[in-house]
Image 1 (cartoon, rainbow, N blue to C red):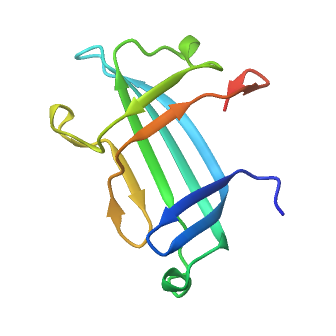
Image 2 (cartoon, rainbow, N blue to C red; image 1 turned 30 degrees about the vertical axis):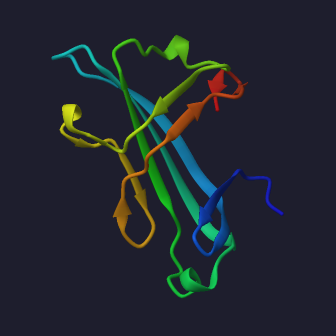
Length: 124
């Protein structure tokens, strides 16, 4: 068993589990309209548990979420912070704000971002 975090996916054929090998976040201010985007990305490694229909692919999921909010600041990104991205496609933002890649690109809906704790001053 790994000490790394895991991505758990509930699929139509059953649960799958992947080790998260890299994760990161950045804040991107848009100077033109004052909107700030929190970009979170997860890169997974090999499967820990996988369904028969995806074993042959040998791929690993990559997930990116973009929370667009003009009230975001680095100081707000602390334990207890919680936000939702209800739809992966946002027409007012000009397109997709989520991307889940596993053999093909797709948006993800009903996303919740929650900061549970900070380690050495970095929220996770």
